[in-house]
Image (cartoon, rainbow, N blue to C red):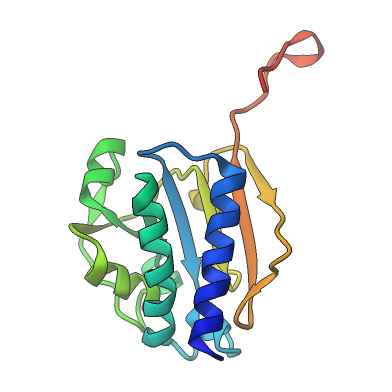
Length: 181
């Protein structure tokens, strides 16, 4: 898989989700990524740091430019814990845990996040405002209720299936309620 193509697809996915989700500065986008799936292998079998670095190089600047925190989900070996900036963990009251993600225990993108973030920490769980799932890593457990699918013409990054979601407030009150847009 050509790294330039992966970079372009990542940029397209992030830009599309940012447009659809209308995130505000200080909100969180969670990203789960199987670099194995991106290169056409089974999830968890071919972790690839070069692919992770390519994806991170597109993700991080786009989010930082808008003041949005990036949370990178680790793999199931770390119970899908997340790498996030310490500032975000403190702001939202997320509990910090002790572990250092590695390519084969946490995933390549999480390992790269530990290197690229200013002050990275790992937390067990978060409540994010939007998310990107690259390779069916199941980020839904880290999204606010109610998650709404975002459909883009782009369906894959590399060979990995792509799913995007934004969130919205719950609609309550029944048929007589009036909802803002």
